[in-house]
Image (cartoon, rainbow, N blue to C red; front, side, top):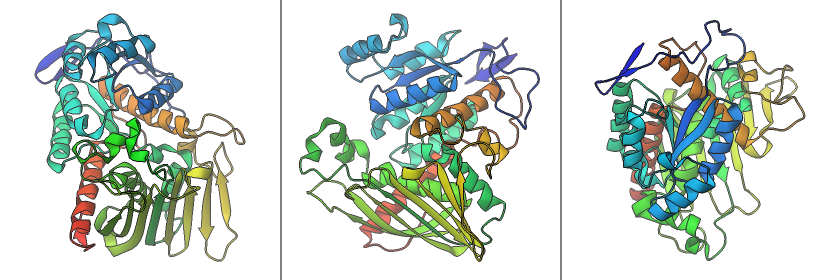
Length: 407
């Protein structure tokens, strides 16, 4: 079996998947774990690495864990990486891993925003699958290029819209797709946090780059948590965001970029909605709330109570569906459930679901098998590119005094 990446032939004699797979059952085990590399060694890298290991499908074997060569090597020791796979630059890592017979199957990109594009591009061109934090890039043309590179490579580029990987979000998506709430008529989403309240917040190392336009891009709040909200609204509703009007605000101490945004939104079919995001809402830490209403009912999900999905049908008793097996949870959703009802799961498990589905997609492409319908619906490069266009539209609208603009 031979796969061709960028006109190079790489012999692939192993099969990752078992011959017999129950497409209605749980996801299969692989014949070996996939090899994962990391570029960027901060807190989110540790979180995602923990989640990747939880799946049982990945092992972390290589990394370029800092842009500072000394720190990169120090962190590699902390991560127990072998010395010959501890790199001081992502360029060198992409080149070396792409030429190894046991090279990484995918790379995790958890750097600041301004290098997402260059890192992802380097690894795609070396024939390596990529999973990149959001926003995918800071520029539309860069995002478009990554979509094209992924298609040319024939591999996978996943994007870290982890909120879409909570089981109850998948259940909500299924209810809406099956007409459970009727014809959609409005979509509301908000993401409220409180961690930017301190007056000296802009002096803290993990915050500085998020408020630096050279690194974060044209936005801070919108590009970071606003994109999660926008993606979730479209992911569950199944509707593309077509237009918006946005107002950026700095509600706390002066900052070079916004800490709050209010939007009116419009989706396919002229469906109206709202989107709000802020980091100055005392008492709100993971305040992501999604509400979708239709002609016959609605669904409501809150990140701070992520185990439950509220399902309303007009004129009928309200329902609360709880994550677990059975009792209203679909078979497709159950694939993403790890513990029984009453034993809570959270963000680490959601990340693990993303890494599970990403691994499944890679395994099927590796073995030249068609991915079963409904499998591997993790956020892909095209959704990442839509997120970049959402940010761009938000900036244009704000600059035009909150005018309606097309996405």
